[in-house]
Image (cartoon, rainbow over all chains, first blue to last red):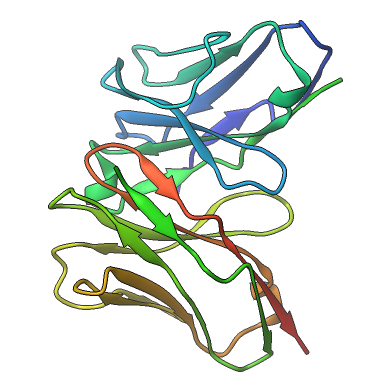
Length: 115
Length: 112
């Protein structure tokens, strides 16, 4: 079965550079979530989209922005990168609000390293 | 606000033994879901099991079962017959009408 696809899997950037992460949800899924997991930490919610509209917002820095496109894929744009942005970034997708149905799955993550 | 508490930073178990990972939660949402994920050292977040707040029966998935006690607000994960490949970080998470909130995780180490 198709899973959530994230790209790139690994990314190395310098401070103050820009990075873009992409997420392709499971087919039929209309909701995308972005999470950030620092070393030794639990995942922290950044932002979510339902039917191409932002549905919820967590602890996403102002330097970050995201959107969901007409084909339901999503991109997380991170600018003016800081050392503290080094983390594993997860995308998850669901059909509607997957929290109530259990159909919520994560991609393999994109590991960002800022030097 | 939602809150998930995992009180066991680490657990040790021998191969073939059963182990219970604790999870308690707090929420004001009348409808919610509880998830368990496994995160091996490679980093991916692997879905294990789900329990809806209105489900009458405890969820089970092969070697995993979720001991759901709604009145106590607990959703413990039981792994039967542990295997070496079960060594990983385990996260309990809860979702209401939107996002998932994660606990701090429990590191499980399975020894031969």
